Amino acid sequence: MIIVLKPGATKSEAEEILSKIEGQGLKPLYMPGSERTVIGALGDERKLGQLHLESHPSVERVDPILAAYKAVSREMHPEDSIVQFGHSRIGSKAFAVIAGPCAVESYEQLSATAIAVRDAGAHGLRGGAFKPRTSPYSFQGLGIEGLKILQRVGQETGLPVITEVVEVADVDAVETYADAFQVGARNMQNFRLLQALGQAGKPVFLKRGMAATVKDVLMSAEYIASEGNSNIVLVERGIRTFETGTRNTLDLSAVCQFKKLSHLPVVVDPSHGTGVREYVAPMAYAAAACGADGILVEAHENPAEALSDGAQSLYPEQFSALMNGLKPFVEAAGRVL
Image 1: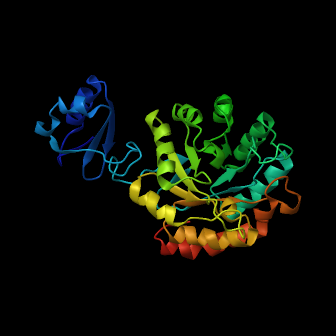
Image 2: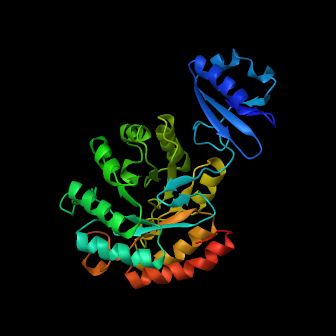
Image 3: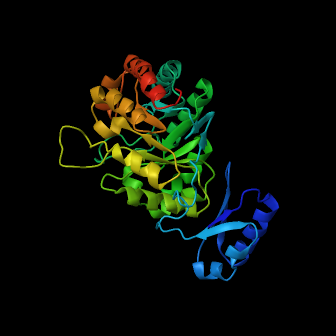
């Protein structure tokens, strides 16, 4: 349920209602806004009805949440959420760009790439330490050593770092070394992992599964939010269709749907969405134009020698050109780069 307080309702009045909700065994959510304070109540609505909050002098109205996903729905939280990632705020007026190689291969490789993307204007560094690959014979990542390299390079360049977590057993290690978790497409519905991340304290970038609907993604985000972590960023990275000209089909209409249905920020991954280096920049521009809050881009110091995803990784000069070309699209969308 959503409890909308009247204009001028005080924080102490809101806390009184929150206490009553919690006393009934329900989960209260406090969401102060610029014009109204909204309180959410998750759980058995019959118990909430016993409180008769619609009669409370500070309550304007009580509305049911119709969406199956409660905590991440815009019904529950009408205003856009902002997720802090290092010095960047995902979901604010600033358009966030996070770039780096698919995999951490060595300190020298990651450092050279990080310096290049930082100098071109990137706000964050991506890089995989654990790599779930389609083939068991492909490069699987450096593991803990990769995490240590990622942390070191992030500190040296001043960039916050994000890396993929692939199983529950790795959550603590990734949280120790990285500034944010990434949940890959293959793990979008790994519900035990999502619950573990919901109990962690750092932001979670949740990638859309290859055959997942918009509702599927939001229900997965709900698993994270229901455990107490609301710092979630949705990532559109393309879906599997019958088209073979690209690695995936980048569904930019999903950005509009996510924005309509949820308050969570949304970023687009045009690298995995297309799998073709030459298509990354145009799709990045389109992402900015359709309302995304940022992009995740694969860049490498020398893609020709990359151990994974070299065909979709940008050369440093191509990433710099992308950043320059992105500016007018970002400005046209009312944001700053």
